[in-house]
Length: 89
Image (cartoon, rainbow, N blue to C red; front, side):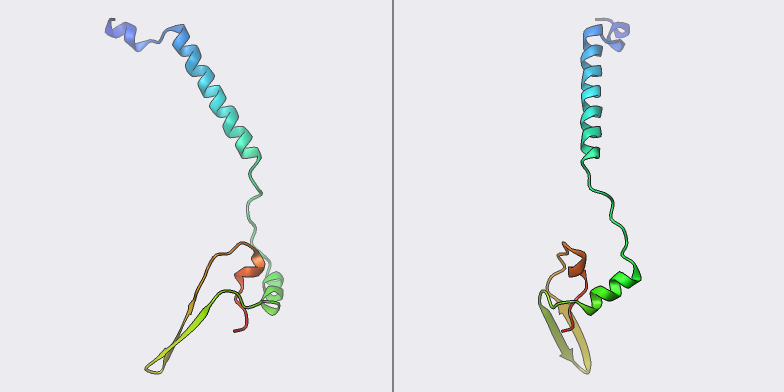
């Protein structure tokens, strides 16, 4: 096969690649339509209401040494907005 002939594809190869690209685009469009809505930031009123109703979740360790105090919260897995505010303890 000459170098010139290898540059151009046969009509069959071109058709197969075109079908593949169309199927790939159709798949990505279908996937994009099933995506959830993008997240929105909660309002200040919502955050204040959540802080008032916050429950203790996870583990909170208090570390004291040399007059300094540090805290280590044992989990940061957040699934719901209500869980993102730590409780009173």
